[in-house]
Length: 431
Image (tube, rainbow, N blue to C red; front, side, top):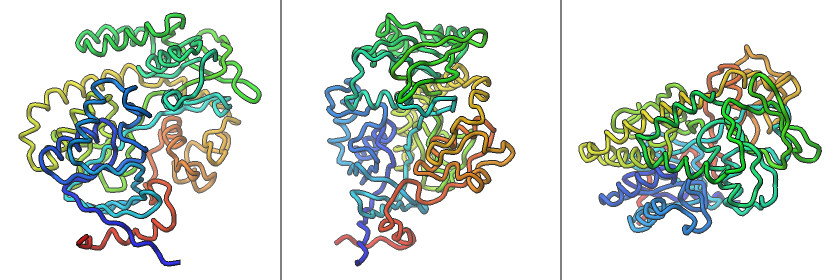
């Protein structure tokens, strides 16, 4: 069978990711007259935080940004997964077919993913990530009448607990592993950001019957065909709570696979950028969570700054720099307050699965190996998720550094991968 020639798209600015950072970058660049193409894996723009089926369910601010994106003239290719990259060219799979995108500048807005830390029972049916529970709820998962425990770390816990309670779930407890004193200090500082303070109060009011317990974390989950109860501890005593659904996650980690593949400098697990969101690689910029977890408001500001720099108009971003820096300080407070505690490193026992794709238990891992040796000896990180779940967990447990990124960055057909060489050829004139 003859190979399908890749479709080719050329643009002034190519943006990978259509969350808040990517949307803001696309709007700013396209409204300035640039040819913009946006590639995103999801069926519609919005990212995880603005995931939706109908826009009427989104906050008004999110709807306004999406409406601006519609009117901007930017070309949005939903369902497009970037699998390889070489300098200013990207190879993607879109609608099952290969696509080569060539651009003068690339803005990476690849977002973040949840940090899962293994504990006995975390692979039971009914145990999901906090962000996963949020996504399932938005997709219509019925939770009315179900007993739910929300646990882990970070402000997302209360937001998801409130959403679950609003859908009829019985939220038994919200267990925040951060120390109570640290959480109180963080909450006391929210007066500097009234919108965040109001949001936190609204989420807390959404789960009036739940016990918000800072300084408490999950040690194990038990059940038969599904989770039935969760064991919690505060470091002094332990107790069990019956539940039908456990949503647990320890914050977010930047998604840096594509930036790393392109050679961008990484520091402390995030993409290093300068004042105008420019990476260490010429023609490549980065905005949003890959540069550090800071939330949607920060991502919107960073996306606009990156767009200005991509168009060689950094002076136009001057008015945004103070807001960006303020959000960076807020992000530093978030990170310091909700950093996973050391006790979480010892929850998994020898029989606990640490790589779900390849069914690798902790007992088969030697802490002295490193990521590459673990792949070689156990296939940990070699499954369909390509280490997106176990990679960050093993790095946390053993202080490993990430292994080298390999192509494909995302799942792709062989028919797409055979066109990787097309990245090194000049784009054809579409006329």
